[in-house]
Image (cartoon, rainbow, N blue to C red):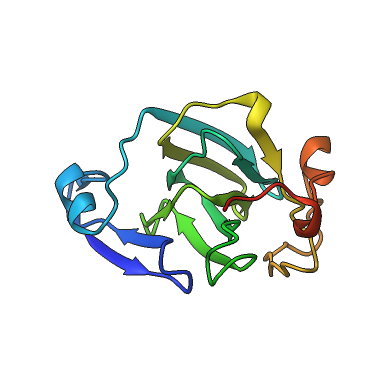
Length: 182
C-alpha cells in the first residue's frame, strides 16, 4: 500500500496495490502491520456501509466524546470525501482537505479522531464503506455546517442536480459556534 499525506498531514490518502487479471482484481484494503508502519495505530471496531444517490451530501459529522477515526473507501460510484480539522491545538484547525474516492481509483482516506467528516456523491449511486475506531454515541454526535464560509469547502456540486441533504445536516453549526477538540 502507498500512504500519501494530504495538505493536512494527519489525513492520509491510501492507495492499495491492485492485482488484476482476466478474471477481475484483488486488493488488500487493510493490513494492520502496514497501517501501523505508516503511523495509523488505531484499532477499528465497527464497519459501516452507506448507499446514496447522486447529489447527496452527508455531513459534516463528528463526535465530541468517543471521537471516531474513519477509514473511508468507495466500492461503487464516486464521492468527494472531506475532512475538517476541529482540533484547536492543531496548526490546521478549521482547515479542510477533500479527495475524490471511487470504485475506479480504489483509494481510501484515513481521517483521524478530531475531524468532522462528510462526502458528496458525484456518481448516479455510491456505496461507501468505512471502518471506525469507536462506536456511534448519539448524545455526543455533532454536525458542522457543510457550507460554513469560514471553512470554505469547495464542494464539486453538479450543476442541475438538486442537493440532497438531511434537515439535520442542513442545520449544522458554524465553526465559530461548534463544539471542538483541544
